[in-house]
Image (cartoon, rainbow, N blue to C red; front, top):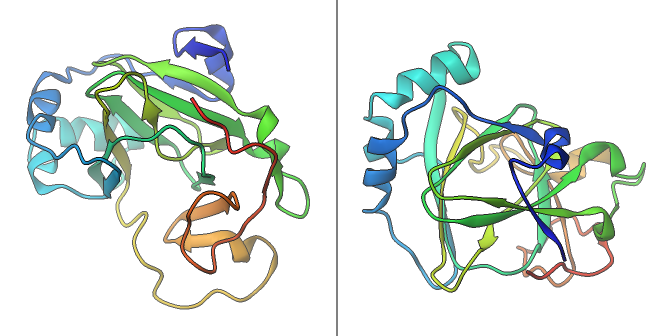
Length: 205
């Protein structure tokens, strides 16, 4: 599959490259985070949130909303699922990584999605992007054999366990965590009860 750079005009449908931020301290602190053989996601990391850039992300990136800064690190080569939120997500690459992206408007009425519509984008180390709320995404993929490290900024409280069961049907069946609607692939190794709606190849890069 062709991998575009986030600087390519094709990326504009999914998000925008962040401008006006200095990621130096943030990337330095990310060197202390783990790089497992699989994938680890921490929605909120105190060491990252203690940095001065926290205030800038909150004020400039989210209009003074409370936020959380976490990370998604590891090794991954497959799509496995797509998710979306009710708001944008910021991703800052501590290493080169590949984002597999789709668009919410391509989700069918029964909440299935054709994986042939996925596009791949290289997010180079040191570059940050905003992924729009309508952008389907999931864990990054390796851009090389060394794994990936990705800073993830979201509104505070996102991606935590749900306080109650959701049984209303329709889109409610996709809710996998707070502010996280997920469509999984049957080969994705997802937890029991996940909504399986990806049709086609489990994209590999």
